[in-house]
Structures are given as structure tokens and as C-alpha cells.
Length: 314
Image (cartoon, rainbow, N blue to C red):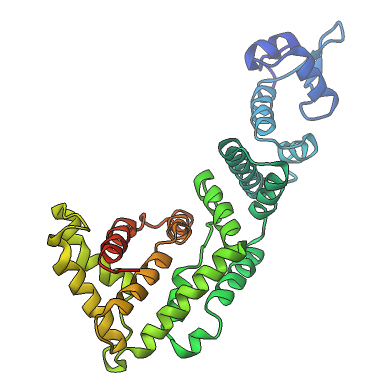
């Protein structure tokens, strides 16, 4: 309007904090056009140019390109629509950066070889469908046809399924990569498959009227917990009643006497359950899914196996 102050490029630069060169660039590009010119032919700008330049600077800092910015300041595009589109694009970039950070952090921590690094990178970049297929193949290989014999295994499979969130943190991505590597390990698959088959046999022998039987590891944990809390040594006579309690439970399950052969069998079973890879899988699963850390059964299993071995002649 007539009487409103006009500013030279130098004055506009002092008001906005931008350089003269930058303002001239925006002016030449039609993003911030001059209001008029001085008698000497220099460009002059009104107060609206200050506001436009502040908006342009903000949008540039947010990563918008000049073509989009020009359309926004000229009101050809709605700023909320542009912001929504760029927010979505940034979310994708953030996810990619998180994945890269997690892989690099894992490489630094593990001292991975180039081959391991490549595998980790591929695993981290799997889509949701690809992750589900990988995990599904692992769980099918472990449980497979056993679900038909023990329907409760369907729930076990669901509880062992990792669900990486849309915006995972670095720890969750690293846990997912390690969990995926575990699930691809043929030896680990075979080990978990054997445990599942043994548990299925125990379930089939259970009383159908009372529902699925508890896993033997949980039974042993409950019997051995008080011994661990009291500091009872597994080889001591004070351990006898605790050992007798969980071996009796196992003998009842199979309808067999609590003899040396049964205790040898139970010791071998508990040693397989005590595979550290199995516990690691459950720990990683909790991290990926955002669950509380699972209770470690290792102390109870170590104690019970040692107690059985010292009482069972070879």
C-alpha cells in the first residue's frame, strides 16, 4: 500500500538473516518478487517479502524443493497437503536411517565379516510380508504337523512370532536381525523341533480332561525355585526332596517308575531345553515385540541337571 516502507536487498537481508545472494536467487526465481525499484534501478521489497522469506527458509529447512515452495507461496498448493506428503516421505527416510544405524551398530559391536554384514543388511530391509514368510517358514519347520496332534501349539506359534513395529528403535532392529539369523540356523531349527516333538509327546500323554499339561521346564522351575532361594547345593542331601518332587511328576506323566533310566532321560531332556539359543530367541522376541524380558530358566535347569547327574550313575 502507498506509504508502506520498502526495503533494499541489503535491508531485507538484515531483517531475515538471509544472505543478499540467497535473496537475489529467490527473487530471480520468482519466489519473492520485488515490489518495485529505486530511482537507481535497485530492487525494493515490501513487508510481505519478509514473511515470504521466513516461510521459504522454514520450508527449505524441512527439505522441500524450490518448485514445491514456489507453488506453496503462490497458493497453488495447500501447505497442509504438502506437509502431509513430506511427513510421510520423511517417515520412510527415518525408518531407512534407523535400519542402517542398527546394522552399523551391530557390525561395530560384533566385528562382523563383510558376508555377515551383507546378510544383516538384507534381513533388516525385509518388508513386513517378507519377515512374516521368513518367520512362518521357521515356525512351520519346528511345529508343522504337530499342531494337528496338539492344537495348543497354534497358540505357541503365535506367541513365538516377532512383530517388528512400524517405527522400531535401533535395539528392536538389532534384535530382529539376530532373531532372523537364529531362525535360519538349521541346527537351531532341528533343536527346537526336537523339543517340540518331546513336548507334543508329553501333551498327548496328558489328561485331556484337565487341558494341556505344563511344560516340564516350568514344572522343574517351580520345584527347584525354593532350593535355589535357600542356597541348597544340587549335590547335597538337602536337595533330595526337591529332586524327588520333579522326578515324580515326570514319572507320573509317562506312567513309569522313578528309576535311574527315567532320571537319565529327564536329565537329557532338560539339557536340551537349556539350550542357550532357545533362551536367546525368547529374549530377542521380547525386545522386538516390546514385551517385558522373560524369566530365565537357566539357573533352575542348570541346578536340576547337575542334581540329576550326581544321582544317576552312567
